[in-house]
Image 1 (cartoon, rainbow, N blue to C red):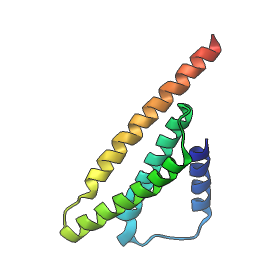
Image 2: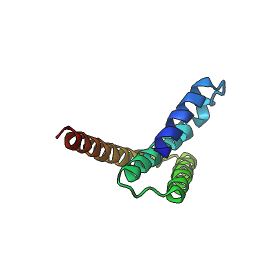
Image 3: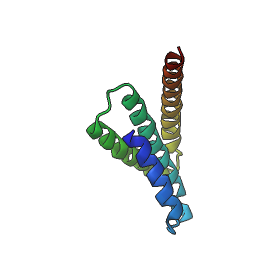
Length: 114
């Protein structure tokens, strides 16, 4: 539940914040947000599976975001969109985790209705 609460709190605070991101950093921010969402969905999944570990969640949250930003920076320097690899990896994992979370919730709801 901690990852979901953190996500909701972050969205709420982000909407209230008057901070704007310069356009040249938009790619970095979008990749970092995607990495963070991947970590949140992974945290929710592990929480539902009763295997959530705060240290793994926090380290993965920051490590994924930093690695994705570094890939984006290197790609910018080389003139090659390397960040597409991060988009693909995080996107695939995000949808896989969402599907597992959805199945888990639906299975739990079916068991409770019987």
